[in-house]
Length: 454
Image (cartoon, rainbow, N blue to C red; front, side, top):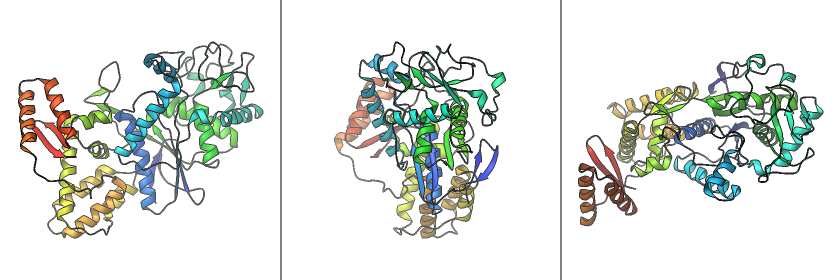
């Protein structure tokens, strides 16, 4: 069995299925901008769990939501993220949502992340959310106000704070992810299940309480309970969602079904980039497209993330990405040299590392040792790497394309190297893009530029 660290239990716990399938829910993106590499680290964690379960022979029902009804912004209180971006881009909010949703799916494909069983959209499950809100009101866990909003009564849920360690009597009013016009709620730690539209005219729906829009947390409760049958074996998200989102979601879900809805809460840690937290204000937000634009295989990011524990804070660097890209090329070349057999064979040390809290760094260290071990036959190395790649998802059998470049392409490469020496970055970027259009990826490292065929 696979054991993973359960944030609620605060210990390693074995994954246990409540039925014939293992049910997994992963909080998806709010589609108002491109997902950065920190977001993608969380989605990769869910993929690791998904792949490890499949390798063990499990049937997996995996749901990941699409938040296209934006919740409050960290930056601009009182306006949701999608409406804020729609106003900036002067586009319809649902056009914004669909465009960034498409980019999200493209990034998942580039990272070789297995597709979910379903990607429900918040905007298409409004009636479902209203159904569960009504159940919470009927059960005495929520209350409607004369202003047309509905709030969860936080004091009605005795074990609030079990995931995050927060306690109601120590919480301060006005958490950044909640609304700032909630003078009609009874207790400052209560949160909105449904908000009256007020002056808002876009992205609003009719309800038993009047025109309005759903709160953030009820979305995941409604989707997970309805699509996974009132029992979520594994709930995955980033550590930043532990509070308030998962704390509030647990209170809602448990109150609706009168039992523990989630078997295991799994959280991935923060990702820094070159020593700093990624933020727009710092100007260091890195997208997967940025990795590709530097001539790196997108799966170099996947390998880089796998070389670090999912529940340890990680500092990503361009140097680490360059090194991971080189490792990928070497392994793929070696796989070709080790034969063409399709048989996969488990290595005990690799399998143990994966089963014990998804210890991918230990698994990769073992693969590096196997790669260098002259006592292991080439066909056995290939079989072991194939088996490991069922979980690692690095596409190690992808062939390296080796073909000669034309004189014109050699000239472009030379011109680009000269442009970089002269620090003519705009010319260097133009030449890189021209070479990429011809199928040549450029990588810039400490010793200069290198290239490979896409």
